[in-house]
Image (cartoon, rainbow, N blue to C red; front, top):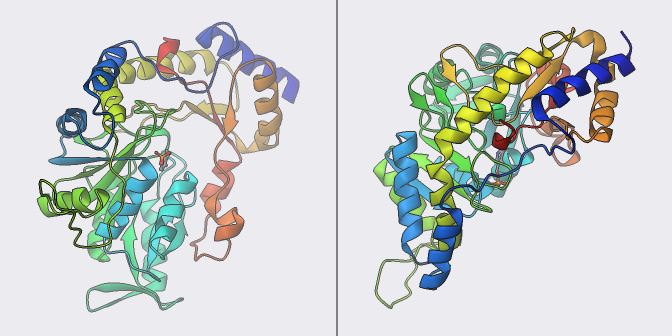
Length: 387
Ligand SMILES: *Cc1c(COP(=O)(O)O)cnc(C)c1O
């Protein structure tokens, strides 16, 4: 096989699934009450930091995910920042994160003055690999008074931050066991996985705290937005407090009892979110159908496979993804170029975090699987309106 014939087969498959080019990677779908709620919001003049839609969005998010509490914030990165503060992450601590992730995960660690510590992933679900993580921690960490210390750096490893890549749940039972055993606070980056379940638990509700993103390219959007999920009433109250400038509730007085953040989600964004959330089950259904179509269309093409939901999980299939066989990893860039030239937006996965110059000196476990897999991943057009 040569790269031209492979690209031609892939373009054919994309064509049969998506129809005529141009086809974007991920478009939002506004077919419900979006206009209605946003107009109500404008008519009410409460577009900003006061208004009913924020409460409603939080209540409905909690209901949908089965989380006891949800706190809406300006974006997923801010949600991660606050989640890590609540995890007790302090300057000079380390936080274990996958090297295969969007840069926000690593940035949020740095906002706390802490240091990302990169760990490897599993090829099957693209999330943190519990087996290699355990071996790594056995080798490099020790417990001192209930605190996990990195023997190589002398720093505290405070938290474990799994990310559910492209919507596929990580091996949460195993990761949770490790978190408990090694005294690590678990924060879940579920930015990409609203609508994905690990067993009967929604992603983002298994660790102590989880976060969601509602950026324009995520499964539902508020324009920009995010949320913090937790079952702990104290953490929820504190998250609300510090994301709203730590202002003590009062009719007119402005008293703030700590350095807080202006991370509150504006009401107009929440109005959009309320309408989008009404459509979530439909979006998930469409994306799952899209996966089945891709699977059929790509089944004849050798040396590649689609990433599928792990056993026992239900994935939202946020971004459909193919993984090339090692033997053709050098074809990836030409496949991406050819498909984009044909009008089908495809893209590689993120550059691994430990290769970014701001993170090259951060601690890291052996990262062989991520190194190999990241050269072979291609995201395909994934909008819910393709089916
Ligand atoms: C989208 C995303 C975020 C944060 O998103 P915002 O754009 O800040 O809302 C964080 N982590 C991952 C893995 C993401 O994909």
